[in-house]
Image 1 (cartoon, one colour):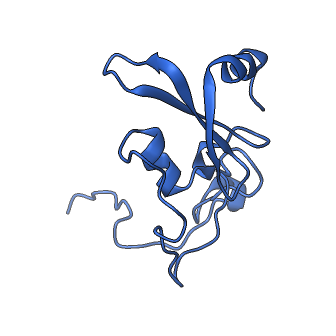
Image 2: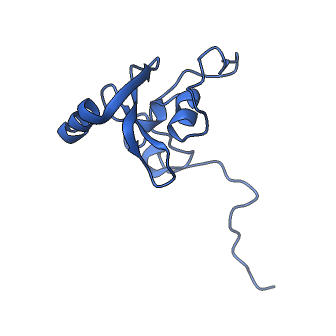
Image 3: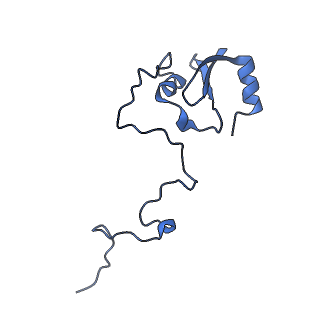
Length: 121
């Protein structure tokens, strides 16, 4: 679900645009309001469905006041072993189902940790 009308209005009146990430999410900081610790409030307006896993690490650090400025994509180097981002698939057809799950047939290979009923000698 996209941002609510209240969030959009709050952003128009109180937000200062800071930047945009590769997913199209837009980041804002309050112009004057501060939180209990004296820091300016920061938030993200997601493009499309609000999916928190779409916030890149550099922007995540900025949102949580770990960094004063968002880390550039060049600083957050991507390695060969890193995969492309996938949204949270919980509750969808693409979710992970372990071997032996009822929706995958309910059968799995036995292993040494399986329960063995005790039998008196």
